Length: 346
Image (cartoon, rainbow, N blue to C red; front, side, top):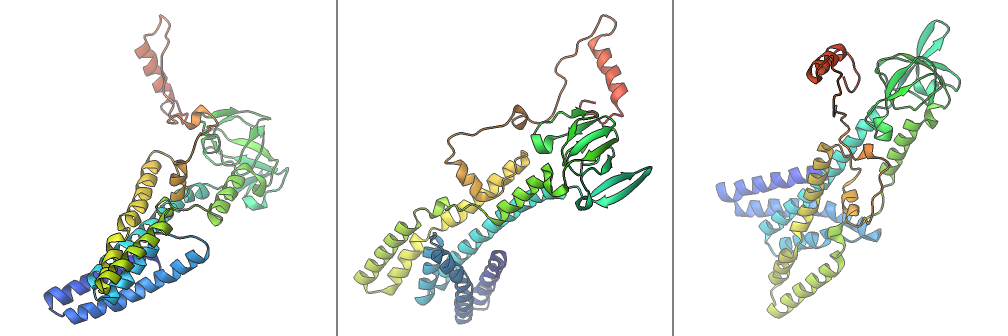
């Protein structure tokens, strides 16, 4: 069962139990409902926890699940329901963060060129990018994405290479200049010769790396889980002493409820979602939530060029005019001439 479904199920159980106990006055049915459903949901999470432990990882979820089982065993079913809501809520938020990261990366994959215009004499034929061969002659129309790597045979145009180099200023390309797949043609139609197959082109290499990183995520222990083992052992020890001294098993469950790290379970995924959302609004795409935690241990960061650090928006800084025109008149005339242009400064 997915974590999102577990969360909705837990909330539904809580609502139904509230109705049974406080409106219909059916305490027994409410207790049975929470106990049975709580055991079901927590058992599915317990299976996942066992798999995680076998892989050598230990998390704060262990203590929370133990607290759920203990409270159900001593009849404190409302306490177990609250912990269950916290636990499923934290897991659902982590899934949401991962889903959001994948949706941001999907934008990169969606920009992958699919069709190329092959020139054969005076005829243009649309073919799949995968079918393009080396030395084929292709035509790239204005506003289209360059399908594969190659060089210009005829024509001249400006190309937006920001998706590959981070440089916001379009680069002028002429006959003989190299073209990279994934760059966007400006307002001129050009003819190019193919030098690399689609699978070997620059943009496809980037997409391949993205897919590989998704399939083989880097192993990293959550910050909230680093001290899970000693904290859990201490909590069990204190709970056992409380039970032994008081001779009451409820004391064991109560200690585990107090020690249950619900704030950590919720705080970590909430912080990840907030950080990733704030970053995406500023044009920064983060692959997974663990990347944010890894940044905490970074000692130095290297950037390839200034274009990566700027806003990516060019602006006119100063206007120089001769005595014939004032600065204002020159700006008006230039704007009139370029109002139909697609150039970045127009």
